[in-house]
Length: 166
Image 1: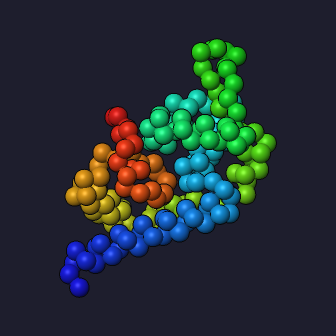
Image 2: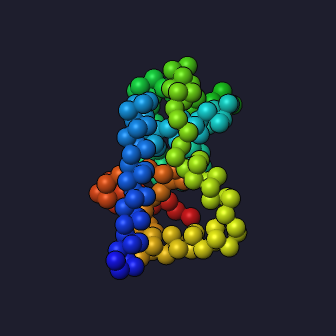
Image 3: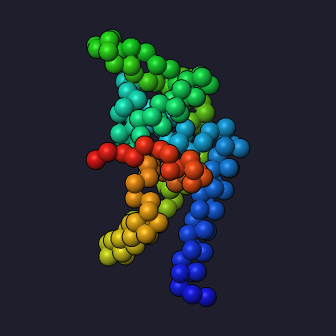
């Protein structure tokens, strides 16, 4: 097997693992990975958080986060309310139903990955990061919107997301 074939096989395995996790998550909780990520971010802010802060914290475009928030609000997992300190700001918080759903959700796939990754030597971590960044560049994926959660979507879904500005 050629080296590029080995690499592509390894990439397909990673994609397959994230796809299987996403399907398991959806079947078990009715949530997608981005929805779970956003619920966790809202839960981490006991005094509420704005949609723009959520987008910034999880490194997804505000438009993507806004669409997911609309769905979560429609499902009565979160609610929006005007800030009493600044009426221009809309603050997000979990509903009781949202807290229940979050408590039932499994740990994100990347938590196990992070634990194993952090157990590696610094040089090996750096080597893996550099290699994956190079692969992303070679696949013309450096402009794609991406969160720090492992999730899967079709190429068409990914390519039309708004890139995060730095």
